[in-house]
Amino acid sequence: MLEGAWSERKPAMDMTGEEFRKYGYQVVDWIANYLDHVGELPVLSQLAPGSIKDMQPNHAPQHGESMEQVLADIDRVILPGVTHWNHPAFFAYFAISGSAPGILGEMFAAALNVNAMMWRTSPAATELEEVTVSWLRNLIGLPDEFGGVIYDTASISTLVAIAGAREAVPGLRVREEGLAAPQSAAKVAKAASDSAAPLTAPPRLRLYCSEQTHSSIDKAAITLGLGLAGVRKVPTDSEFRMEPAALQQAINEDRADGWLPFCVVATVGTTSTTSIDPIPAIADISERENLWLHVDAAYGGSAAVVPEMRWVLQGAERADSLVLNPHKWMFVPVDLSVLFCRRMDVLGRAFSLVPEYLSAPGADQVMNFMDYGPQLGRRFRAIKLWFVLRHYGAEGLAKRIRNHIHLAREFAGWVDTSEAFERMAPTPLSTVCFRARPRDLGEESSVYQKSPDQCEAYLDKLNETLMANVNQEGKCFLSHTKLNGKFALRLAIGNIRTARKHVEMVWDVLQTEADRLDGTIRPAHLSRH
Ligand code: PLP
Image 1 (cartoon, protein in one colour):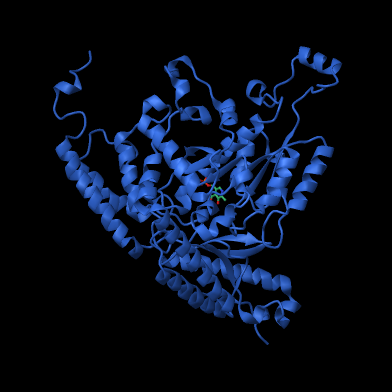
Image 2: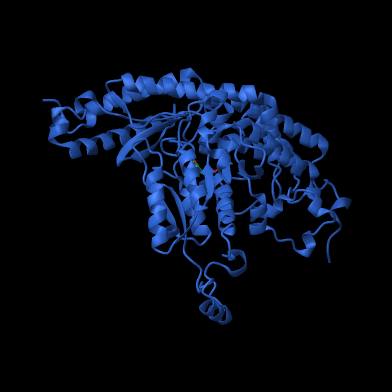
């Protein structure tokens, strides 16, 4: 027999308002204090793997614990295991921000806890998503024909865009038949007797992107059943931008070989170097070849908010879809990615599926975001974007992003004039690729001329160790990439709290440590004679 209903017992099912207020104020105080002092913490967590797990029991507690105990463990258990993405000297990957207005917006999303799957499950969530997506579209200068939808990440936005691209291929019917569906005997017979439709097996689809494209494109291809073979990587020029002539050649070769080209992905702000593909030339080819053009502007698209940087999206108005992540460089806490699409009807065709239990009166009069992607349940993400856009305004966002670009250019200038470092790529946005390279190991030097491979191997080791040591010290955090086979450091500026003093600090730390290391680990045969 069931015991008495909860409601008849004490305490209440959830905290009382009084209790919530008490702990809520403590949490807000904690967050405010954290944001004020995060710069004093080591950026990269110093914990060994397993440390957090070791501090936790194997089972959830049998009896509830007090909120005092739980909150105390934020400092004791959680904080040491946090790599502080909110740290002003976080320069790894693409630096991001949990800005104060964004955090406040998140609180409302959690408190309201609505599911934005369709309009009537929360009109405010749906309509605010339409509003914020349209504001953002205006801010970056995309035309009104683009609709939009908010997802968690660019990886998912791109997956949805490529599914749309596939749906747009006439006659393919992947939604109905599947990619690997064997043709029915009747269909095969019909195809055999009908020379206008001789298709007996689905053609192999091919997508084009540059060799610098983010791995999310490959992952989308894996997920959508295109396979990695369905992605053709187009070579880039000396500045890591897709070569349009090579794209055209790849398409021609593939058509001759029986592939079915269907999509091109161009990037504005590639992950390694932030290079910007020549979208106008790529759009010319996509239009001529009737291919869906998706622009990955996950990071770089934010720069278009700065009026004098609008050019980064030049040509993107001709794309079919474009992804921009406000959670990367627009001060919105993770996660929030916007997929813009000028062919929302095609996304609807690819994904809309309304079972009886989700049908609603008047559903065709309103936006139901569940119709434009694989997921049903959706967080109220738009509210934090709304907070950020309203609190900073177009001018405030532009000012902050412009400042990051300026700081990156300053840092690039220091590298360029240094005798111990060199730049590894142009710096069009707010990320600098560079490496330590002692002057006497320059390409013109006799040591380098004599043993270039050994010099390069040493430079890789020097930079890898430099990065490891600097990150271990905890004052700042950088990540790396490989460019033309060479180990390159990346300094990505994107945190809202990053100021010039943090960039100066990392430059000092790098110079001192590079000098010390070069004096310590350089092999004798590469030393100056
Ligand atoms: N596209 C680019 C250019 C990126 O740099 C990244 C991540 O850094 C992504 C896509 C994937 O972003 P997300 O983590 O939102 O999936």
